[in-house]
Image 1 (tube, rainbow, N blue to C red):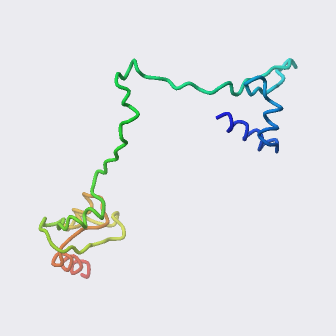
Image 2 (tube, one colour):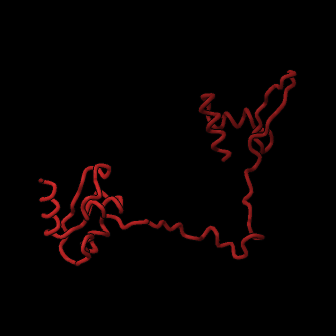
Image 3 (cartoon, rainbow, N blue to C red):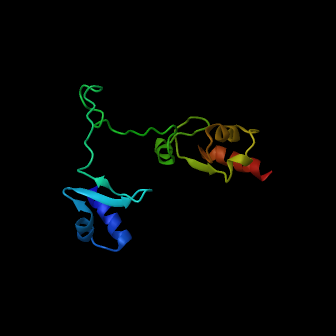
Amino acid sequence: MKYSILKTLGRKQKRTVGQILEKYRDGTDVVIPYRDNKGNGKQRVWYNGGFKCKRFTDIYEDNQYDKTPNTMYLPAPALVERLKEKKYELCGVMGDLVMHHVRNINQLKADTRWNAVMIKRHRKTLAVCQYFDALIHKSYDK
């Protein structure tokens, strides 16, 4: 953190970190001089050794809160998982899949079973068998 502050000041003043340290060091602190409204010279300590890590031993007895894995759960299976499952999403039978795809969900109407399923799942794709795929395309051709 100290290096970051020095680097930022150095970039603003077009100087090296060593030059900034020489100019603003007061002992072990990085101090920025300034004048208040009355014209008095003051100093603001920007860095004096860093921040201490807070221990939550009073709240958590075993201190395992940092070791908990961040697990992300997806509400619906991804496309790859749906393809690997090889299960038709309309009739539930296992077999070779054909993916039916529409461009825009907002233009679908729940007038057919497959449209209703896609609207309910809020998906633009539907894994179906070849029979249902032909039936779907036949209904769109009308």
